[in-house]
Image 1 (cartoon, rainbow, N blue to C red):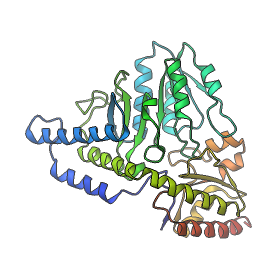
Image 2: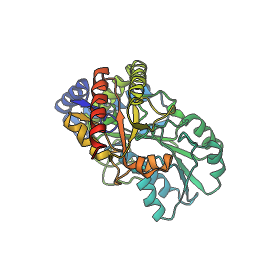
Image 3: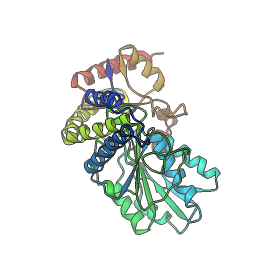
Length: 371
């Protein structure tokens, strides 16, 4: 099997899985219970939380454990906006956001919020001048992803943060595709989201990081948890194993980035020999390469590659559309949007796998374009 869909989900690291199993067996108590077993579970959660704070070098943040980045994004946007709607009703974002942002914003729009989309330059990067001009006394929140999940555009989080700080506006960022891959100063962001399954951890675990001074409403009610912002029995094994996943991925972040960057360049050069459009650009993460096919639907190619035991994505796995809204936004070409394929790399990807992908693409392009 050649797996090239790491941006959708990653295989669990053996050490992370071992941590999950060991914690599940050893710490059986409910962390909310006051007896010895409960206190032992709470203590191991506190240790894991402190480790995450240390690795990410963040101070004065609440670490809110969720079921994944989708819930984290919902909690950040709904929890903050509905709690502070008396301060303003405008949300500024981009058209490059994951569906867990864009659809949550659509919900908020129905609640009376005004949504504005910041202009993008030709490379898909936020127009900082336009962003600053859009912020006014009605603006409540800016939410802009760190890396787009389909084409891999990296936004300048630091410069965006400088603008929001100057304007005294809360800045949230979905950093799901960035954490564990590219180094940034997380203290530039007021709230940010992540998912364990993107960094070789378990599925069903996410985190919302929030400055302690920021108050949000819960969106899940019904009992005590690790914070007051999300109810439910804490997932002790999930939290401990997520901490392990974060530690492991950051131990090798520089080495992994260097390796994937070289692999990315090799793949790009090989793709240039084929009859495809390369949508990713110099501002894209090396972990994501997006291409569009000529006269072949993306789903058709996906299944053709699958027959060769090669797995890629058409567009983001959470999309409801039959085309890539992101590719259409950047190219204004519906055919490119309907024929886009995302190839996502990992430190586990090999050069041999890339060669086999290229060979399969070449054969299938020639075969499918004749139909």
